[in-house]
Image 1 (cartoon, one colour):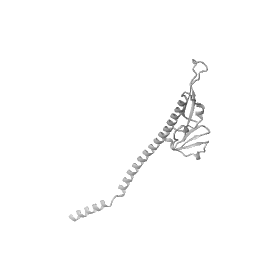
Image 2 (spheres, helix red, strand yellow):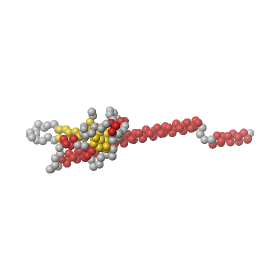
Image 3 (cartoon, rainbow, N blue to C red):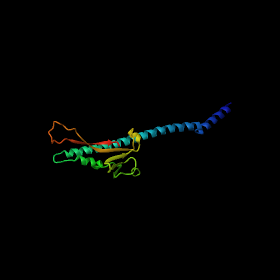
Image 4 (cartoon, one colour):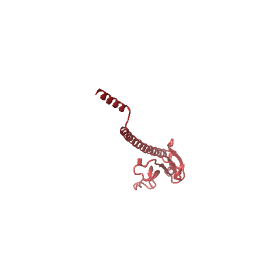
Length: 177
């Protein structure tokens, strides 16, 4: 009887030392696949968020530079023509253009511009960003985000005497077409 127990124990030890069996290997692969899937989803989520924040930062920088130009024009002895500002490339107002800025292009073909880059369309006077992924911008219908310096005038005040200059304003806004 001792011999049978010894044989059984030896057989069990040999079986444990053989390593994974097919079922155990399948379970390990399934767990690994689930972990990799969760990791990739998080990486994609953070890439989308990084793209969204980068676009928002460039837009905020351009808006700040525009506000600076307008304020500078209101100083004594200075004037600024808002119409000219609306025709200029707003990236030129920044101290440093975004790293993914391709420059001023005149009605480029889609093949000329890669996604994830900014460019200024000289023909339409629009700053354009080509999306890497549409998911980070919700319901963006196109793969291009367009921004433009827009002029606006405040309503005329009938209480002011004629000849009084009405204030004008500008804003850097997204445009849809």
